[in-house]
Length: 116
Length: 115
Image (cartoon, rainbow over all chains, first blue to last red; front, top):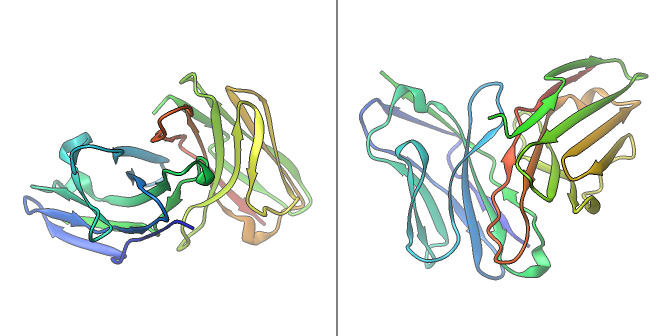
């Protein structure tokens, strides 16, 4: 079975400060990891993913995430947050094994509030 | 944003009504998904279609009936719903094949309210 945990329901950060959204995962094999963002009344928008290779993945809008296998984590980061980054962020995992099929398991989401 | 479209964007229906949600993907993908997003609950995968064949049905009540007539279109037929079915219904698509890591792209969702 695969699972994802986002331990923080909400993260508050001042504009211009670094932003981190935490994610830990559990899979039986190796993971594919994804981050999505959801703005109010919108669908989920893909930010970035880790498949293999470099542990530091760069994505859209200045976001990046670091895959840490020993800590089973994939935290999302942005060096300098903008007010427009305020949204709901979802981490998702898929087990690389064929048995897992194409099923993505999502975390519960973390609401980010960036204050001016 | 326009890669996956969903209609209607908002829907209010009574418990005895029958309605359908429509999803269309313009990305040339071969797999489509229905998710349910309720307040304070994780995203729930409902159905998966790959190459127009249903490959997953996550114990969804029979009052939800999916249909995938071709690789670009996906429907969710609704009948005799319950108030607890009120949620945001999201459609997604992906190009599945060798190598894994296929990204799912989401539509804007249909906000459903069951009275």
